[in-house]
Image 1 (spheres, rainbow, N blue to C red):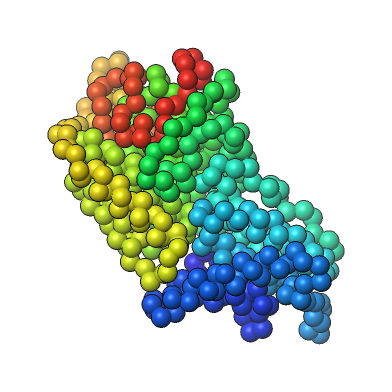
Image 2: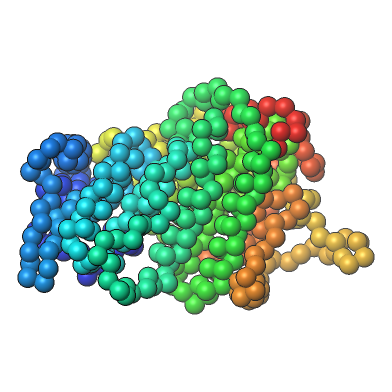
Amino acid sequence: MPGLHFLSQSQVSFAAPSPLLSAAILYVAAAHFPSADLAHHQPVYFEAFTRAVGTLSIPGSAIVGTLKDEGSGPVSGKFDDVLGIILCGLLAIGWVDTVGLWVNTAYRLLLDGMAEERGRRQAEWRGLWEGLRTIELEHSSLHLKCPSLPFAPPDPPFLPQSTPAVPTSAASSIGELLAIMQHRMPHFVGRGIPTVWETVSSPIPTAAPSITADPDDMAAIRAWAAEIDSWYSRVAATTTNSSMYVRSITLLNYHLHKLLVLSVFFPLRGLNSTAASDREELLDSARVVLKIEATGFEVWSSWDLTIITHASLILLHAWSSGSATDDDLNLIQNHLQCLSGTQQSAPSLRHTLATRLETALQEVRTPTRRNLATLPTVSPSASFSGPSGAPASEPTALDTANTLSLLSQTALAGSAFSPRGGFLFMDQAPTLGILQDLPIFDDMAETAALAEWPPYLLNLFGDGAEGEGNV
């Protein structure tokens, strides 16, 4: 599984798994193996796994991994139990409401297992902690709930005097991005903001509660966006010679996290403060993640699939309003095919997302579509001016190599790009040689603020914050 980036193959042996890990392996194998016969047993394996997790809370349960002595020292079977919860948790993010309880159970097992092994396999145990944190943060972000795991694992008992440093890799870079989310997201929990999961799971929009925005909300969300930009400007500078996979996953995660932040930003921004530049950022990132998937990059992470489906719904509503092209519709249909092309048995995340997207496609095809808006070559909100204030010539396509050179200098200087005037994120983030430069959206008139939401944003994000001057 590509999702096991936190553990190397040499760190895990499946020769004698615990009962819980055995059930998890069978479930994951049934979900991923391209065989309808094996997928037919997927619901049975899932039920066996959930029953096994529940049994862990029963005193004296015989299903808990036992402690063994393999000659080189004690080996805790709880390692297998935690790994099994991680395996199933990666496929359950978003659509299984008990994922948070699984994570808390696994964290208790992790702490106990580390103590039992008395300092052995510290790197492996930390890898499990990274896996648990990934699952919890991704699940919590889709539902806008507070994560329960600490920002850093506690100093483990019997810690050796020296432990090897965690290697710098694409996996550790994604971990840094998750740490940003863990720090910034709780500010917006419990505010009545429509969540990504509500958008992708419910075909019928529900009336969103009124949102009262704090004076500090805009400062908090801009700080979140600035940290993501700083991360990308630094990481992109180090990936110029990396594999296509590393560059793809870096670019994909940057725009997925942008979409998450913007999904929080729009409801807080309010009815009277939405600008064309805000919508431009939203549509740009929605289009980028769909184009990455369309290049053949395999997306299987539950969180990634959910955010990309969210992006598809955003772009689909823009298309129905005449603000996007038929090429964008092709990208949406490609994502639907990726979701539907599975042997997995229902219920599953892919079935839930595919049903929601197919329903939305049918809805937008029913009414008469408005005429397509002409897409300008330059966004009015991103016009350039010369030193004297006179308009400069039309900018050419961004040169990726030059931009990466600038990114490198920026990273070395310890700073990040500044966002455009009126924009939340930095201007023209490089595509790392993966995609051609994307045309800039302009879905409405050249105005800094509109009195009402575009229909496709109103459908997805609700009515926004009440009143003026709240944020």
